[in-house]
Length: 207
Ligand SMILES: [Zn+2]
Image 1 (tube, rainbow, N blue to C red):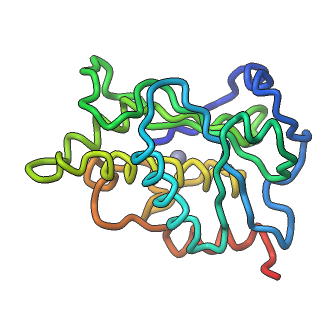
Image 2: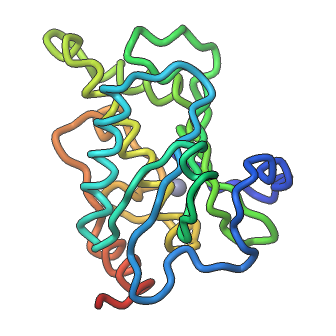
């Protein structure tokens, strides 16, 4: 999943009006706090979004990276230094996702330009929810908001690893594998591999 996109027109992202200095490190040394700006372009659910934040925070937290979350408005009004932006396309609500003809696209992408990983990712909500839904049955359906949030959190964590390590590399195990199944998205636990933990830790020096 989570195709590492080749060069695309990055200028569109300037519309965010967020000041991210060119060449600025996402994780300056000795600082492991990252603010994730959540930019929903379609319907979303509070419960699903909370679960997504909790899941992504838990996965990245194992490496010492602390995530906080902000809306576009909050980010524009504040002076955050370490921002990444996740845009969510389509319907992110915990309701039966609309049928889709194209089920082969990636769950999400992280943008790059000239081989440089940018702090911008984009999640295809219907794609993620549709996959998660396929692994749910019986009593799971009554907890769909939790499962959708968990799935989205794992997809977000995957993209954040690309951004924070500034690399399109994938792992053989864990959340950073190139392809994640529906069960990977909804199962009890999906963590960073040991290699990914070390890669993330290499990008900052703990106090
Ligand atoms: Zn990936």
